[in-house]
Length: 55
Image (cartoon, rainbow, N blue to C red; front, side, top):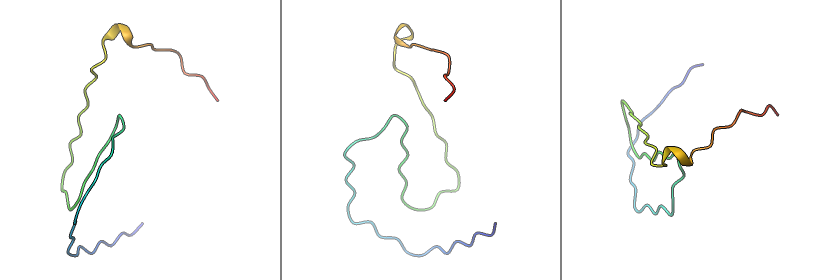
């Protein structure tokens, strides 16, 4: 696979974000490295772990 990227000028006028999901990432512009982190704020007793069901 050959990928050719041509960076040109980018102008963003306005951004409106209504809501986000449990896993969200929003970026405008170039980035060399992205580090994503996650935390779980649910108490351990509220988490229900069940076996996966094959479909």
